[in-house]
Length: 88
Image (cartoon, one colour):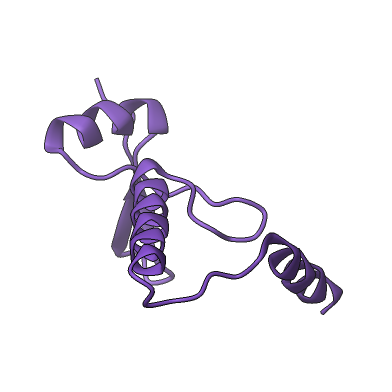
């Protein structure tokens, strides 16, 4: 039996439903719904789809570099940029 809790607004009307996560996960998988995104300390999504999207973007940049269409940033310049962002 599911342990569902109904959430009411200030007027007493049902405004939402709380389903414990251990009951929600099997339902989410059965329905084919995406995982709830998780974020790192910088607010960047760390779920599988986000990681794959970032890898695809990086591979596209490498392809464009090999074609001579873009110039890549050096690791030194990248680290300097990160330092400058952290100083803000």
